[in-house]
Image 1: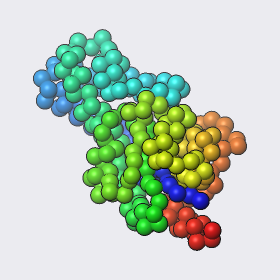
Image 2: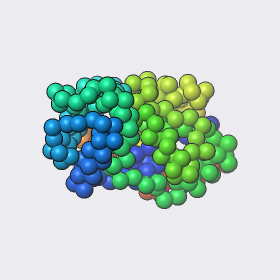
Image 3: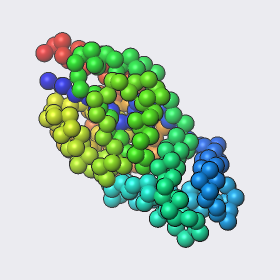
Image 4: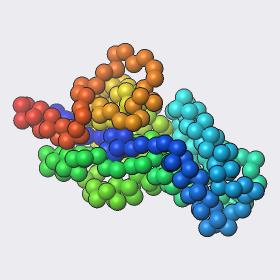
Length: 251
């Protein structure tokens, strides 16, 4: 019997999108944060981001290979701003603010249609509901769920920035299960990528795996994932509730 459902955040609970305007907005948002903390650099906003932006994207690629996540106070001083003359202590102090900004500015995000109704339905079924998300910010997922008005539906939130492990590393899924007090076969997982959100739960033996595709799906699913198919491919996230409800009624 499925007793809990765990969700990916960006691309699953949320629709998200990014293009050149997001990149430019990030440049100026970073400049504002630095100035608000009295941090000076020898570059203008766009010139600075032309240096830092590619470094952040390269670091993300490296982390996707190692499946390890660094803390904001490591990412920004040691990688994005390496060899850029800034006040390191001031930069460390605002690194989480920068990480939060990056997650919410580099990507346009909004709660998927019918997600709130779906979450409410799952709680009415008595299911444990959690998030398992890759993110470079410590607190952004928590605050974003609050902004969407759905934080109350979640019993637990497991983040790569806190655990140090990125999906599909088994440890982030093990931690989520331990925090939920559930066995793998008692959990469903819902995500948008095969590479992270199907491979990981499948290897851990999760009872159900759902995929709902997003802007990120073709960008992240570039390998061969034979043998790692979801149980359900859905287009409306509300289907998670209707499918699990039918399964429960049939038991």
